[in-house]
Length: 305
Length: 254
Image (cartoon, rainbow over all chains, first blue to last red; front, side):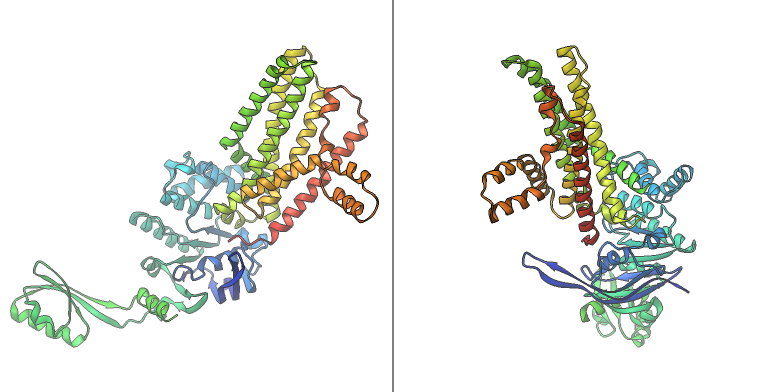
């Protein structure tokens, strides 16, 4: 598939302090995003995720390196015609109502009056904000702002969507809604570039990820190739057994009443444990093998990086 | 088209800003006060009303231009609203001009409103509708346009408080710079005089827009003066805007 976004060896340093001291934020970022995929851009705070995004959007100028959005440089209006962007912690014009706010952006894309009204109504419905249509944005909660922020990013029906920490500030229900919306947008054929440090959410929906630490991409690829299928340990909840008998089989994590949560590291021990429980007439309530998650990889890499 | 959209949004922002109404209220109060002052004054009362009235329009107009103008661009950067805006297909110069025209439109309406109140007060006092006063107000407005451009220029790279101080200094220097001419005549020719000449060429001369005295006292003015003053305002404004665009184009939005 053709690449819609290509970043090649990007460098950016900022001068900070009264006596300017150079601080390198990006130290040679290279990545490419193919059409139609959900691309996760992961990294701890201060890794350079937002700085990369700003270079792509033409908000800051990289010191070195190349960015191509649909093959155009970021400052070309053509590059931005087909692009949507939801910033981190979005703040918008708080003196506007939700409808006026969307109307303003629709006008910047030159939408016609009739299409405009239809589009605004559809988008407000999509993000579940129809009721807040005529409310000034200053009265919005953070989660509500996040929702109209997404509506704003979709106003031009973009082919490429940049979402910076889109799940921040949302309650569990809001997160689920947003995840569903993102997956639906993918089905419509849009490409989504997702910056985040909330890993569970990314894991479920991303096709490919890049992990950035300290201004460098340290790993990049399809999620399956990054995460091994290897079982790290098995979590077993059981009851009716004396904890003292379990010490050889695994590591007891906690007890609640007579229920014991046990971490078993060797697969052979599972068999032994089952035999023990059977013999003592105890009960097994759950048995969950834990494979490697993105979080494990992430923590490992951040530690190394 | 895009400039117009941004300008209208800026206009909306300005008219929903409380500071505008506060200043407008004080301007109206000052205009009414001129009537009171006339009662206390010795001499031609109408002239006092006109003098104080026109000065009030000018001062409060300048305060509006500076206090709102210096916040316009800075607020967008500070509140990060500029991120989403500039990620849309608009150019940075379009954004800046949109902001400029939005505030100019706001000031036009405010100046018009203050001017009308002023004309009514004069009308009540003299029984005549003095259209010539509008000419003085028009040049006050041209000056406001220039001050707006200056405020926006400063707000492209500094905080509202600093920008306000810079813009106010520009205004004061502009109204005092004619004194340089006198100084030049009193200085012997040499390096000092050259330096003063250079300075007087660079510094703005905002007295060019001041027709208050002539109009209040009914003095005749060569129409060419009007023309040159308007041209001076236009060229100076374009120069400042070009400078603002140049600075804004190179800026990183961190």
